[in-house]
Image (tube, rainbow, N blue to C red; front, top):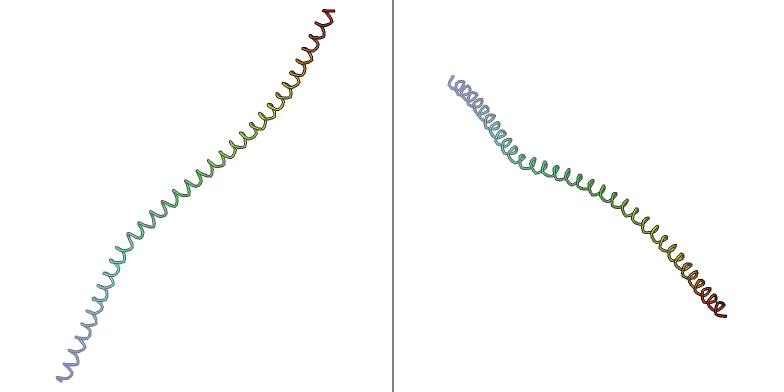
Length: 119
């Protein structure tokens, strides 16, 4: 009878120990979960900061690409204008050369007229 009571007492102790172990395990799990959540928050914050910086970087890259495109168009227009002006300068030099040749001819003709007039 005493042994039966001891066995019963041991079963109760075992059940209590099991319950205590489960409570202890749950407490540990809760503590670890809290600690993990606390450690996760800064990482989540860093991740969000990184994402925001990435978005800003992409926006800046797109802005720079648009500026480069606009600058390229401006450069092309300026190159075209420079080429046109160079052609105009060449044309003006040719015209100037012709005008100078015509002026020489006129001077020679005037000199001949003066000579003929003197005679």
